[in-house]
Image (cartoon, rainbow, N blue to C red; front, side, top):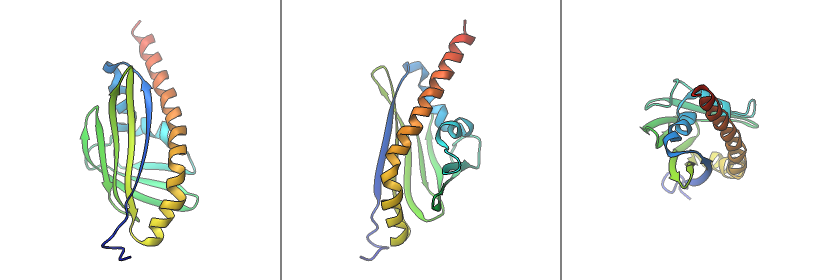
Length: 165
């Protein structure tokens, strides 16, 4: 296979339903958009984390995704933000090519946060490393981290409720 002409992109998806009122959806979006809030639910040091070069995932922001077992990284640049709805990222360095998305979809009694990656390695070796080592673990990792996110959002809602009394 001529790798440069027939690049095989792999799509992986994860999502979580978060019970929240429609007027509070921005709270969920903020846990992705705000770097500090994102780190609190997503990062699992020292195995996997993302470092961003800005405080918010605004257009132009670059995130480096780090894996330590084995050492691996790639970069994604925010190319589009629709506040309260979506963030689109595109490869920006490192061994991967493609795009990633965070999308919010209103759902009955809450919101669905969806994360999509459509990536391929820059060469066969990197691509197969991604396919056989990272992709199979993505869904389990994201489901675990989504459980942390749901707890953090629940705590924030409780704090907001107490402060408005």
